Amino acid sequence: MLDFFSKNEFINLRLEGAEVLYYPQFLTTQESVKLYHNVYQNTPWQQDDICVYGKTYPQPRLTHLFAENDLSYSYSNITMHPSLFTEEIVHIKNRIEQTTNHHFTTCLANLYRNGSDSNGWHADNEKELGEDPIIASLSIGNERWFYLKHKTDKTLKKRILLQPGSLLLMGKGTQLNYLHQIPKTKKLVQPRINLTFRKIIEPNL
Image (cartoon, rainbow, N blue to C red; front, side):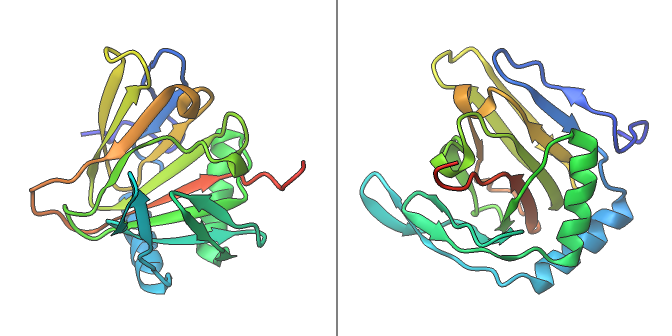
């Protein structure tokens, strides 16, 4: 359906107050499948407890933090300590940086095992990420729906089907003005991994 796109061509979602760009075929099918199997098999996945409205639940997905340094990342009362980037993740990080002109220090990997795994409404606005962070999210494995909605204007919303091998760049204004989520689905779906690249700001810098 989207074969006419090259890896550097993107769709601008044209959201008011935010730059969100979608690269439908950032990776070829062969590259996407190879990277998926590598990350799936070689990542020490973990399932942390998450605190929501004062109650604690097992996080509805598996995660792991990679980085080029030892800086931790905290969200929802979870503090993650990274392992060093693998060779494969460094390679894909370099490609993303060349395409987007943004530098990333850290990658939060998420494994959605089935349709019951999800990520609720949130913004990636933790203090470690700085005032207006840029997030690059690479999808491999199964496709899943991704939703965006404005924090105050309910008429400003968007959904997009994130295909395997696609890259979503949430640029300036996105985390300040919008929330996003990967909702649960009752459909029978295969596992999906997304590699979310971000820049961790060192304390006091």
